[in-house]
Length: 569
Image 1 (cartoon, rainbow, N blue to C red):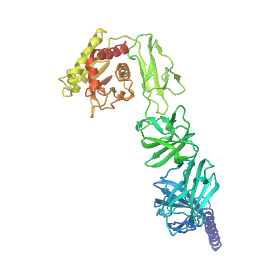
Image 2: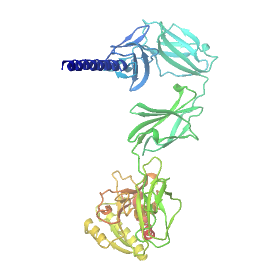
Image 3: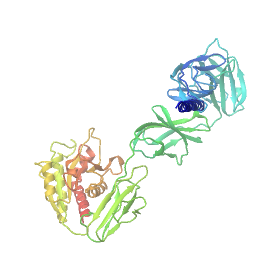
Image 4: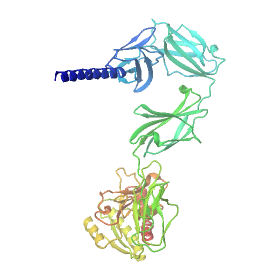
């Protein structure tokens, strides 16, 4: 028994020793960094240094300087007094300092604090002329000049020393003869007497002058969906480099050189973030002479990535004549449409739509659309059934007698004008032998939907005109419940054809398109009415739109009727 106890104790001691060894060995391999803080900044004539308290197991420290949230300086040191070589800032600028400690495995720990520092060394004033005129002496001004300090100013051309003066005052004049035989960048550097660099200023002599640039597109304040942005500009003559800067809240988010063709280049969507505001800066520069570069800018708001509009068809699927040719379309430009006819959902390996389909038998066509920088569209299913039927249309013009048109036009009220428009639509539909029902404007929406369902309307069209808060909005829009609503294709065809005669159809901002009510509109709600849509013909509180509706009432009504007739025939 005692022998067994001894064996167990020995094994336990061995296990404990092994455990301690393993812990110690792991600690050796992965030394934990200790907490540390930034203590101060030491400034002498010989050096500038950041002192930090030692971090346990640190093998190096890295200091970062920020000015207005922009990192502009980085220095690595093996000791906790980090000497700053060639740190340059403007006199009295407010700087933020951060320090990171690293162990031998390059694992990192940040200091427990940041440190604010007011830069106290003298510096060249930067708002001086960088371009040198012929025979003109070089002029320099020093901010923070201390008469008790001894300074040295040296002049260089492409790293070659040209000139030195120790007669440094608040304003310095360097004879033109020193540089008269040179061209390009002349660099003046301010040092302490112990050769610590304080500030740099560049002059440019006999240098091509870059022409001023102006961004012509987009506008100064531009909003877009998440997409490529094409930038067009004028000017920038003599520049041989163009750089793009994207700032978010004053912080540089992206920088790249661009290569314009015909004064145009594209910002790819891949470098933009959804729901983000940017300040976009285009810089035109000769060589790397950034101080005399020309810049232009605009603000950019990037909204969410949009979804490709669904595919709609040119003819009604629920009854269609044998041999009818059907087109597939999406309201999103430059889409690729994929489809199947075997009942399976389409993928990018499915048939690519290239020409209209001829329906000779009952056919299930499933579709979806793909476009660049958008999500793929919903999958829409169209079950084409061979057959003939007299189409039944339910027209539901507005009953809103309190919505008045623009006061300088003959547009009276929405109720009166939309009922007149419905009269025109009804006339042409009946001439095509369609069965037409109308709402009673003195009843309510529940009654209208009930009547539409009772007569088994193939298409229910609510007819309205629109208004906006500032009376500047224009355009047409039509609502269905969602992307896969049965009424989508009829509504899309109505919109497409009416937009073709809209007087401002060349203005993309007015192209409001097919929209989705998603349950918010009673007459465009798949739960309440079959095949329902609501059209806003134009804005009655806008002068141009109101006059169009008044003067072109017959043309508008005939256009809408013809779209319905074409779709159901």
